[in-house]
Length: 109
Image 1 (cartoon, rainbow, N blue to C red):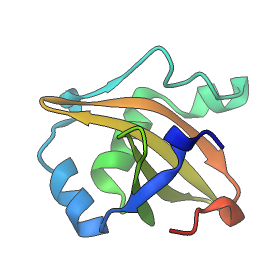
Image 2 (cartoon, rainbow, N blue to C red):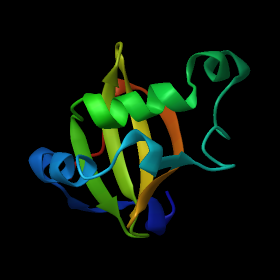
Image 3 (cartoon, rainbow, N blue to C red):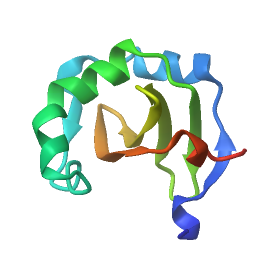
């Protein structure tokens, strides 16, 4: 794993929720890279709105800050996990990328 992508610090779920709650749906943006890792089948399921709903409505199971300053946020997704990488800046949040990982790939922090 690239050092910049490693989680250096765990963030409390409540602290993360306080940060996210400061933003509205229109403040959350996707980038060219957001859907880069998805297979064609997944692209039909995951649209901008679905990812924004996860951020604004679901409680993550783990949140950490990577060495590169981005947030790594993990949500339950069926029997797997949805890993979302966020660049949180004022006045917006950029969804860098996201992908589905096996439940056993949750990092130990």
